[in-house]
Length: 66
Image (cartoon, rainbow, N blue to C red; front, side, top):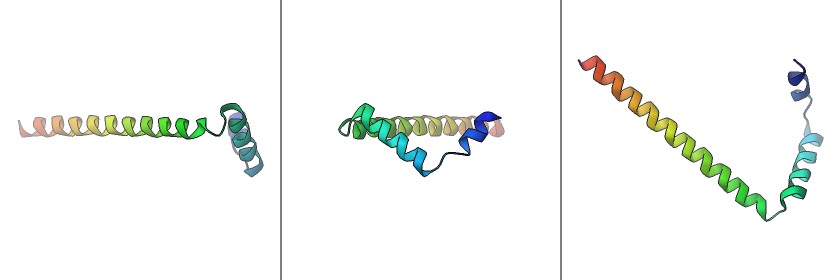
């Protein structure tokens, strides 16, 4: 329950603070590389889930045909 209360209290000043801390920890040059890696990971995850759904649909269609 406390987590929901804390999450509801995040506003613009807190987001700015988080961005500043990330900049201090990783530096300006490293952040684009991190974002690129996250984007590639999300793309790979989406591709894997799409492939899994297509295989599932194909299997269900084969079972219906029998």
